[in-house]
Image 1: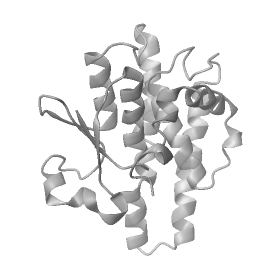
Image 2: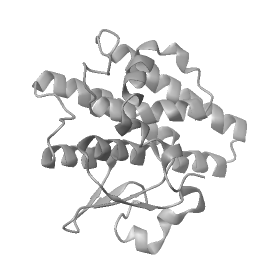
Image 3: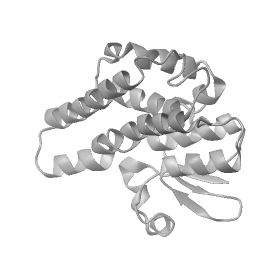
Image 4: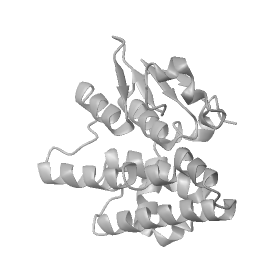
Length: 210
């Protein structure tokens, strides 16, 4: 398999964790987002959105969107499972993950922040925007799992929720958010980062890290 990504992309970070948890190898092909390499014609030919990650499986099929990629990995390599068998619990895990992957991360990603700068917003305001988005999303996520015993987001094993949470907390810190306001999220993060699958997927461990 081939994984097109960027070391700091939280969406690619999610997929790296999933691959590690599944014990799957992949050739990592970096595309420097700040240099616009994701907009190169050769890359747009496989991912017309010009986003990372993109996964090419061993048969040459192309998959985009991190959550879709992770669910495909979970369906084709079911151990260890990243979604609970219970349908209600499964829905709750998906809801938490999508609160990050759909409603938090995209609103503070590089493309959105670049557009805010193009519209003339001062850099301080751009950074404030990103921090606000992170606080809003993480506050909701804290409430969603407030009554979950853990130590992970939903029980004693990592799920899709944890794969989305850990990279988003890294984003929040990068934008200066005081994450101590989210003790339940930090509990899940600590449990996750104690696992090699999470630790080895971290941005600073990637060969393209700046």
